[in-house]
Image: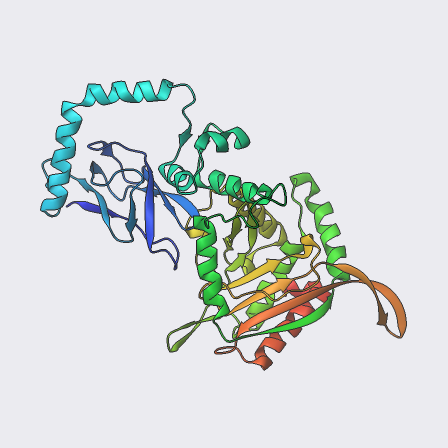
Length: 399
């Protein structure tokens, strides 16, 4: 029985995907679990594996952008026909072309590969460059990479926007640059978030004890080369607070409130040309060093444009930290289908009154934006109060 290969949905907002590169050829014998093709979509890419053993019949070309669910290939057994006349026709035509022009195609590929100045890039990267009126040679001269992906083009476009400033008073008063694919997705998500009837609640937290804990943990993990960041502790504490306040770990689906039984926290990460939100799963069950390792790996992959769909979906709550940018407080916008997001400001030494005496303490401002359709002011305040208590006495992260 044949196995259909379709454009898979990776993430709740995905509507279409691009075949970046076939990793197998038409009529190749494949094994279950082998990599078939690279799928590019929204702000990420991933590798799709073969679901079964058999002969691969490819129906769609590299670079094709198609709706979710579109049939692009099948894995068939010897002598088995494809599903439907269109698939069979395409397969037959492709086979005929392959047999008749194999030597010619091989010669052309060899010539292209050896052509001086040719830049290797994924089809989606080529499409993105062409759509923005730039050459791949421009990008590779800056990136210095042998093979470009869409994230490289996005990064180049972002850098170019920063330098496109009129050189004199006679120059144009404005410069217009088309939105990149990543920026369009971000804009759509932010528009959805801004349309939610939300309220933002803020509180100050004494982060002094957390800084002491961080120092102790980093001394403990030094031999392993692991460093726990301020954000790692915030993620861990947030998970502990969500466990104690399950009415915040929710989302709205039409007329139903979904209470999530697991705590998967999205972590906003700035990348060239935009923002991505990889997800750390089951944070409440992780030790600080595990959170640190998971967050570093996701940040590394985000910077390289190598996040997969699974790594960017399934979040139940999001943390956005602008403290490293020197921001004291801000109003974050709820991400995707979630119902709340935590904004984290910088840690700043301030004079405060403790037991009747003025002392210097490390203060952080937390801002919770919540969907008022499902989260009222009282539970939002309770959550912030619980999180504040955990951060000020970090032993509560573990009990």
